[in-house]
Image (cartoon, rainbow, N blue to C red; front, top):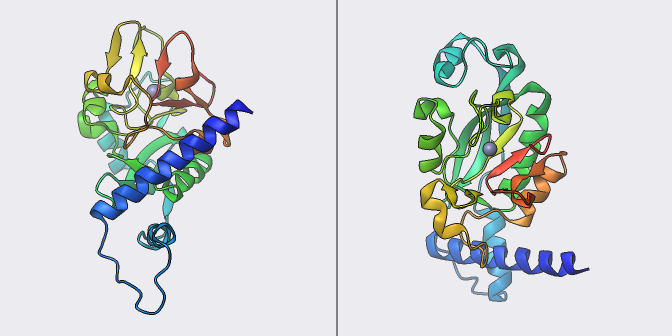
Length: 239
Ligand SMILES: [Zn+2]
């Protein structure tokens, strides 16, 4: 019961944040001279019509893309390039506009990830950037500092030497600054320190809708861990 009360509150707050954002940065709305609807209804109506439809594509890694991915993949990585897929997906930027993002995940999860981000987009959840980590020369730190949302990166875990789940294309980090990694006194990225307080919800912080979008494809959220918190992190195996 408590769960649902909390959840309702969060969703309500998230909608309020979105409404404020759209009012502040969206296109000017014409006033209906015949029958002006209630303000709340008008705002929601605008929110559902202002953005283009969600589009996405899934394709294999061709030679040109393999060359681009030379920073995130190398011989010896646990998953071959042939098992990875390149996704293009529409997302809502922090600027309130629709953008085309790119992401690489394991082929097994490609369709589900596309479906999850369809729901994320439909909920008007803003994403700062969605680019391959190769744009940041494969540096996880640089990608996080840029608040980049990404998936595949053949690298070691943040705190150890084992392959990160990102190395298998079965983990995604969303808005790292607003949803930092926290372990003891360590906060990554450092700019995420002001987001250790998880309430009230601020722009880019994960909403229940986003969490549910991943839960419903069978993925787990690192923000629910108890030993450490990895608020940006979703994975297929809860690691
Ligand atoms: Zn992660």
